[in-house]
Image (cartoon, rainbow, N blue to C red; front, side):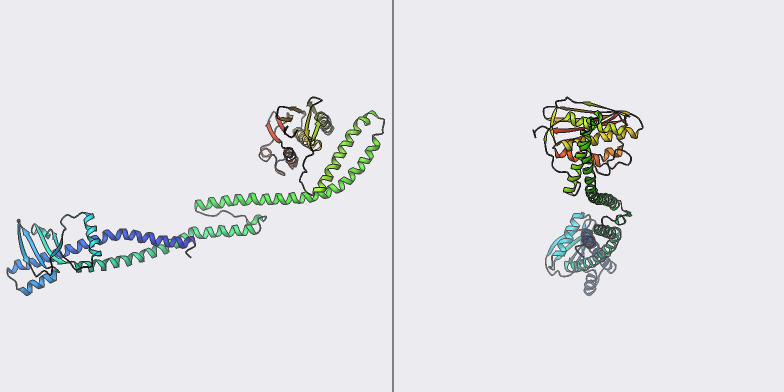
Length: 458
């Protein structure tokens, strides 16, 4: 029990309530002592009035009056005259004198504590003001034993009452905290355990229902985290399924492309000038497709092999990409290439072709989705530390959702129905070269992507 939140709260409540009671007890016991002594002064004054009425009283009656007042002597001062009203033998000398006419709170508390901790039987003198102004001062001599016994009895009663109040208060607070805090927290823990057993089950996501603001915020944060985690797990499952499907499709597609490759070898023997010009490009395209299928089959999942770096004349590679895109756009879109014929950069030619092809295809699809023509420009250059390739279009720009998840598979699609795989794959291929793929600009005037490849590998 004491290792639980409610159990510790119960103990702390009892301790704090008892501490508060102690702080109340000290001035309370001091007040009780003052009232006790004032009562003795009043009794002594009443006893002295009997003497004034009879003028002479017997020794037995005097002793009885003093015993009733619980004092040894009574002295009444009137008009600066000090008069011994009642007296009896004092068993020992007076230890100290207490003046109750105008005491400070500190003096009352100090004297009360000293009286409680001193077990000896002492004789004390108490000074006070007579009731109803029946003189200037009244003075009595008395034993401290009766006072200490009365104070101990009062203190024990106060402590027992304090303990009962603290336990009762702690029980009420324990129940309140258990209902308002412990049980909701336990419910959250149960939700967490249930969700951990099957995180892919959306029905196990917590539904915030707490009334406490802090606990509601915790539930909201947990719900957001669980929704994101469930989505990530589903995406991972889809990627795993896609990897298996791609491997199967690649196996059959490789066989089809291999047959097509055999046919293109015969086409190359044609003397038709158009065929002579296009056949090598067709052969290279089919070879790239066959190589991609074989790579997929080797790895069996959507991971890319490390690039095989070599110096590539980039002009020919860009020309192949743009010629293929031009055929796909059926002349609706213009293509421009800004690159010197002898410029070389270090890259894996097949992977670089795929990256540039993906960027140009996205630009073409963006222009086609806007139902208008446009211009796609591919620029290549270099500086002291990097080669760079920029793909620019004058299309409508990327939607906001695509910008937020630009290089995330299945979430960063730039066109309606797109999966976003092209940009995700391209970013992975460029990272494999030690470079970066970045979105430089996108607005209503167009979009620019840039590829930067480092020269330190050279």
